[in-house]
Length: 114
Image 1: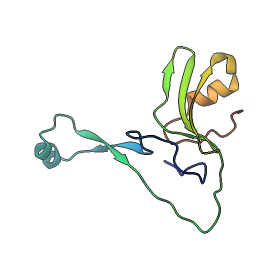
Image 2: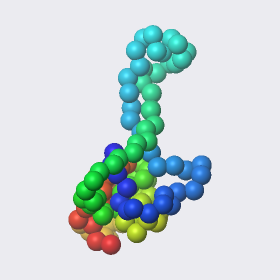
Image 3: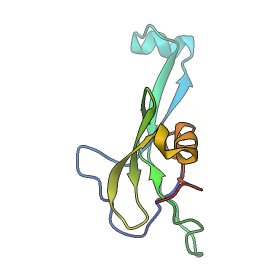
Image 4: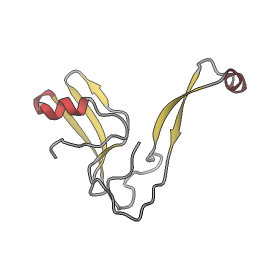
């Protein structure tokens, strides 16, 4: 995952919150303790990053898993201006669509036209 693209207050409204998810393996004991059937669990993480240096990137970030369909990708984005938006990429967007298809939760929108 990655840091915010801006230095403004978070634009998300509750119950939404800025986080990322990772799939982690459960041990046998963990499965028994939680009475779980599957050997994995999706854990949600949030973080705080601090630095004396300014931010190294001002690119928008993907805030949620991309929604893909036939010839389209919908991305929920945290913009560098401190706003949260959704942006639809279609095959008509050519190279930008090809790049957007490869993006995942937490990725930056490097090399994509605004």
